[in-house]
Length: 322
Image (cartoon, rainbow, N blue to C red; front, side):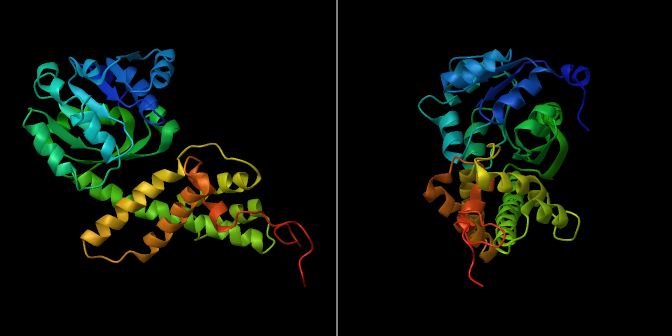
């Protein structure tokens, strides 16, 4: 259960720094600002301007953002960006020891895979900072409402420090292990299913169209039976919309290029075959090479069937051969 503002505000002793004010970082920062003293940072001036327009206080450097913070929340895209913001030339590591309060933690919300987490944990520990591995799911709207799914791997003491912030963001907070990396492992499993389900939904709706079925009716029918899934219901309408134009971008297609790449690497490291995930990854890769990387991930239907068919006709609307 997500605590209300008055409950969470009692835990606000040193402030929260949110690094990364993009599609997920900004709504998380504004959600937290209702209960904590929040300072945001993003390397893009336009992102800082958008954040400031919401009333959020922003710093012009990452190091300034973490000054006086008891918790640093990372909302960046991938492992390379995590490495950069922590330990890069303009990273916050040199500022962490003098700036952060004793017992401070870094909360990593990105899906980055398991491999680099041990190194980050060790290097942060040398600075007296704990890493809380807390990848999340739910999208920007749910982030702003405190309705995210967050899976956590962390030392219990570090988790207790981070818990008020995580509970402010999550409607479902599940602790899956007692060390950083466990959260990434669970999120990897989650993303395998999510990527496969999106790809399967695209194939199903494309097949319905190719068979001359109305896609809206098909979607409504499938949602009532055993073939239903969250991704079918969530992405299906945008797939239908995307045939006639560009769907609103709520989750970029190239995110699943990254995430299914993480899935494949994890499966190979574990000596496990994952042929269905690999097939889904290829669809998203094809979409990226076709210029759809920044489109909504529902645009993967265009990889399966780039042109809408018409009832009784072929792909360009002419009468089909009988």
